Image (cartoon, rainbow, N blue to C red; front, side, top):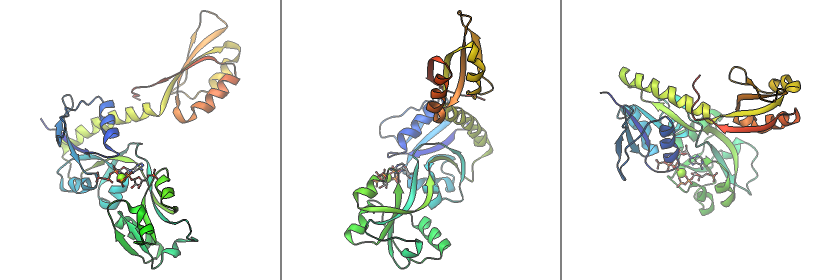
Length: 285
Ligand SMILES: Nc1ncnc2c1ncn2[C@@H]1O[C@H](COP(=O)(O)OP(=O)(O)OP(=O)(O)O)[C@@H](O)[C@H]1O
Ligand SMILES: O=P(O)(O)OC[C@H]1O[C@H](OP(=O)(O)OP(=O)(O)O)[C@H](O)[C@@H]1O
Ligand SMILES: [Mg+2]
C-alpha cells in the first residue's frame, strides 16, 4: 500500500505543534524514542524526523512527499516548492535590525554595511530589490550577538516577541517577510500520494477551522431574540430552541475565536444570559 512520506522537524520549535496537528487529524504515530522514521497505524503515512533547514532539499529530491516547515525556510531555500496549507502556528517575522544607538532613517543606511544572518538569500533578494549593496556574514545561530562583538553593523534574523533583540540592544528596522508553519509539497509527488494528500488536507482544514471557532450556547429573552440573533454570525444561521419557560429561547451558534469577547459584551448588553462557550474539535463544512 502506498504511504505518503511526511517530514517534520526532529526537535525544535516546530516539532510539538507538528505532531499535535497530525494527532488532531486523528493520525496516530508509533513513536519510538530517538527513531528518525515512524509509521502511522491508522493513516497511510510515514513520518521522517529531520532538521527544518534540510527539508527543502529533501522535498526537491523527492525523498519525502510533503513536510511541515517554517515558511521562512522555504522562502530562503526552496522557492520552487509549493505551499498546500498555512498551518497558523510558529508565526514570526524575518527582519533587519541594528543597534539601538544607530540613527536609522532608511534602507539606504545599509549601503556598504556588514550584515550577519542565517538567511542570506532572503537578505540578498531584499537588498537587490532596493538597490543596496552590503557585505553578508553568514552564521548559523546566535545572530543577534554579532553587532555586540564587532562582527557586523546589523543583523537579519527571526523576530517573534522581540525580546532577543531587546536583550541584545538591537531594534527592528525592516520586516522582510512574515512566516508561519506551512504544509509544503514536493514537486515530484506521485498521483497516488496526491490522493492521500487531499485526504490529509481535508482533515487539516477541519482542524484549523475548529481551532479558530467557538461553539456558543445562550439563553435569550424572546422579546429581544431578533436583536440577539443579529449579533450572531453562525455557520448558516443560529439554532433557536424553545425553553420550558416560554418567555425564553436557547440559542446555539458558532463564532470566530477572535471576535469572541466583543460579541459576548454585546450579547450581554442585549439581555442574553447563561452564555456557554465551548471548544470545537472538528469542523467539517
Ligand atoms: N521565536 C520564534 N517564534 C516563532 N517561530 C519561530 C521562532 N523561532 C523560529 N521560529 C520558526 O520555527 C522554525 C524552527 O525554528 P528552530 O529554531 O526550532 O529551528 P532551527 O534551528 O532554525 O532549524 P533546524 O531544525 O534546522 O535545526 C523556524 O524556521 C521559524 O519558522
Ligand atoms: O523575538 P523572540 O521572541 O525573542 O524570538 C526570536 C529568537 O527566536 C529564535 O531563536 P531560538 O530561540 O529558536 O534559538 P536558536 O537560535 O537556537 O534557534 C530566533 O533565532 C531569534 O533569536
Ligand atoms: Mg531557532
